Amino acid sequence: MNKDKTKVAILGATGSVGQKFIELLSNHPWFEIHELAASDKSAGKKYSEAVNWVMQIPLDKKIAEMEVKKCEPTLNSKIVFSALDASVAGTIEEDFAKAGYVVISNARNHRFDDDVPLIVPEINSDHLELVKIQKFGKGAIVTNPNCSTIGLVMALKPLDDEFGIDSVNVVTMQAISGGGYPGVPSMDILDNVIPFIGGEEDKMETEPKKILGTITGKKIEYARIAVSAQCNRVSVIDGHTECVQVKLKKKTSKDEIIKAWNNFSGEPQKLNLPSAPERPIIYLEGDKYPQPRMHRNLGKGMSVAIGRLRECSLFDYKFVILSHNTIRGAAGGTILIAELMKSKGYLD
Ligand code: NAP
Image (cartoon, rainbow, N blue to C red; front, side, top):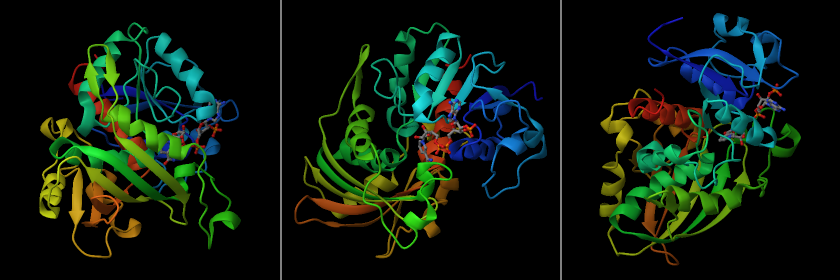
C-alpha cells in the first residue's frame, strides 16, 4: 500500500464500468484501489472468480486476489466510485454518503437531486459548490452524466459560451458496451440497429440543461436550451457517435466554430490533472471522420472528436461527435471528477 495515495473503493466492480475503473486506476498517481464491492452473488469470492474480465489488459494479479465485499458502508476507503446498476444505486449511494463516504457515481439515480452536482470537469467545475449544502456531513454524492450527454455537452459548451445556443437536435449511434455486460444479445444486435434505448432520450434532453446551467447561491439555474434526442443502439463495441444539428443565438462562421472547439480547455487542463487530455475537443478535417474504431482512443479515450461541420438547412449548423462511452463517458470522466475534487480540497 502506498501511503501517499488516497485509498478508493469501487462499487459495482464486476460490471462493464467497474472493470474500466480497475483498468484506468492501475498505476494512477493519486488513487489506489483498496476495496472492490458488488452484489451478494459476488461478495465473498475472489475478484477473479466473480468477474468475467473483458478488458484488453490482463487482470492485475493483486486485484484478482482481492475479496469482493458487499456494497455496505463498512469499507475502509472513504472515497467510493460507484458503477452500480441503477436499480440498486439510489439507496446504496445514499447510505454511503450518510455514513461519511464521498460517492462519485455513474448511475442516474441522484443526477437531478437539487443539491447533487452533475459534473463534466471542463464545463461546470463550479457546480461542485453544491456539495457544501448537502445534508451528509462529511459524506457527499457527486454524479457523472450519461455517456452520450457527455460527448454532446462537450461540443456544445464552447458554442454556448461564444455564440449562445437556442436549440439542438441529436441522433445517436451508441455502442453495445453502453448497455453494460453482457448487454444486448448478439442475435439482436449483429446485422442490426435497435432504434430504442430505455430512458436515454430523456437523459439527453434534460441533463445538458443542468450541466450548462448556472450556479446561483444554493441552486442550479437550468440553461434554457431546447434539446430533442433520438437514440439508437448499433453494432459497435465502444464509442458513441452523435449527429447533431444546432441553432445558435448569434450568427457565426464555420471557421469561428472550429476555432472555438480547438481552443477549448477547462479547469482540468489548467490544474494539469492526471486524466485530463491536453485537448478535450479535437476537430478532425476530412469527410469520413470521426469513426469509432479510429478515434475513440484519442487523448487516451478522454478527448471528444468532432467532424463534418457544415451548414444546415433547418438549423444553423450540423456536425458529428464521437466519444468513448466507458472512458470519457463513464470511468475516465468519474476519475477526472475525483482528481478535480482532490485538487480543490473536497477529498481532505
Ligand atoms: P453492468 O455491467 O451491468 O454492472 C453492474 C454492476 O452492479 C455489477 O458489478 C453488479 O454486480 C452490480 N450490482 C448489480 N446488482 C447489485 C446489487 N443488488 N447490489 C450490489 N451490486 C449490484 O453495468 P455497467 O454498464 O457497468 O453500468 C454501471 C452503471 O454505470 C449503471 O448505472 C449505468 O447506467 C452507468 N453507466 C454506464 C455506462 C456504460 O458505457 N456502460 C456509461 C455511463 C454510465 P454483480 O456482478 O455482482 O451482479
